[in-house]
Image 1 (spheres, rainbow, N blue to C red):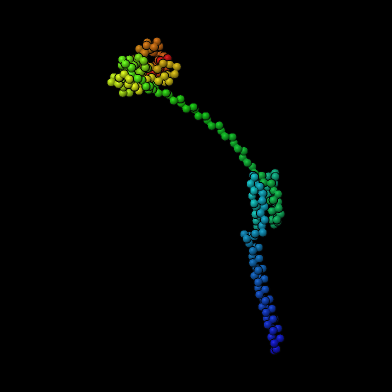
Image 2 (cartoon, rainbow, N blue to C red):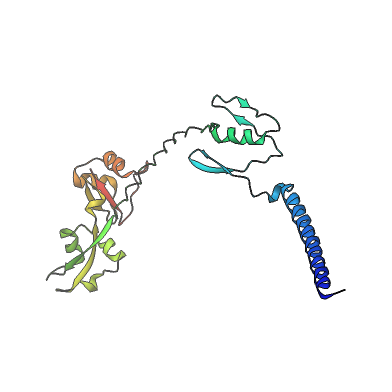
Amino acid sequence: MDQSQRQSMKMIFVLMVSAVFCAVATFVALALVIDRSNSPTENTDMIPIVITVAGTSVALYPDPNKSILLVSEAGTPVAPESGNPEQATAAAATAIIQVTETPAQPLASPTPLPPPPTPVPPSVIFTSYVVQPGDSLYQITLVQNTSIDLMALYGISSTAIVAGNVLNLPIANPAFCPGMIPHVVRDQQTVYSIAREYGSSPDAIAAANGLDANYTVKTTQVICIP
């Protein structure tokens, strides 16, 4: 066998090997394609159908192995032809999906809250008082709406009555008795004696101050005289 014959044999051998390799590769590739097309979960060729539901865009991925039920504009179910998923998919793209929205119920008017109670002013307030020459505890009660017992209740005694001394004097608060006269009940006073002093009546004083049936008042109490 000469040199040219040996080269021809080599070429034939190479071509045969290449042909076998190409055949094997083609078989493997074909098997992969068939397996991929038979797998519904790996089918990436499905084109999503985008529809709008209540203003929200929704993407639908049709499943060829399942039937699709469409709803017409009148609300009547429309069944696609069996075995034709492409027709069902095309119909789904144009179907009108009705979304029934429950009308918003009007909110019940809240029950108005009762107005907060008006705060009651304190019955006693304090004012600065400069002790004058010749003053006494009794003399001060004649020029200020207070009493000796009320001053004693807040620590003011006769030892504080020195000319020029400034007292933090407790007095009846006029705001405690709007439209009426505030009065500090002194020792041994009764509603009857207070009524005579102001020219009023015990019944009117009792009604204005919510007194009990016995017209009970206490020393240093501030009452309102109508």
